[in-house]
Image (cartoon, rainbow, N blue to C red; front, side, top):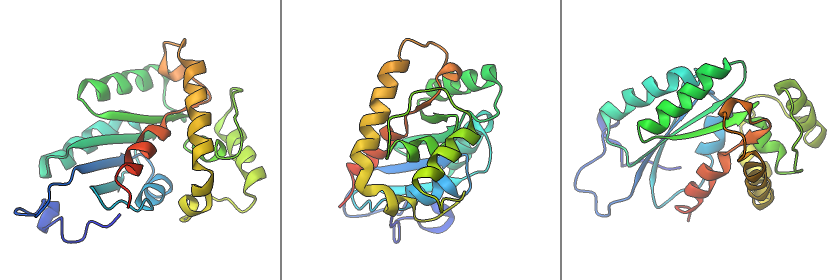
Length: 198
C-alpha cells in the first residue's frame, strides 16, 4: 500500500493534492501478523495507514484516538482477536468501538481463523492452539508473523470470504460477541480494501 507523497511530516495529510482519495486507518492488535497482511494489499485508489500496536481490544480504541488526533481519517478499522480477553471486556470493547463510529474487525479465537477459511469451512468451536494446528495441516511451514501470507492466499480469497459470510449467518442468533466461536469478520475489511485496488 503505497502512501509515499501523501503523508508529510508527523503523518499529516499533504494539502493541495490533485485528487481526493479516502484516508483509511487500520489499527491492529498484532504488531506483525495482521500488519504484514493488510500492508500487502495493492491499494492505489485510497491512502491506507496500517499500525500494529501489540495490544488487545480493550486498549486499541485509545490507540486509534491517538492516530486520529494527528489526522482526520475517513475510515477507522480496529483489528483484534478474542484470545484470552475476558468475555465481558471483549463485548464492552466492541460496543464502545461501534459507539465511536469505528469498525471492529475481530476473530474468535484468533486471526489465523481467517487464513484457515481460505482452505475449508470450519464451524466447530475451537481454541487458538487448535486453530493453529489446523492451519499448519494446510500450510506446514506456517509460523507467526510470516510476511507473505497475502501472496500465499490471495488466489483462495473468494472461498475465504464465502466461508466467513456463512459463519456470520450461522452466528447471527448469538447475541454475545464473545460467544461466537469460531467467528471472523475480517472479510469486511478485505472487501473494503479490494474496492481501492488497481
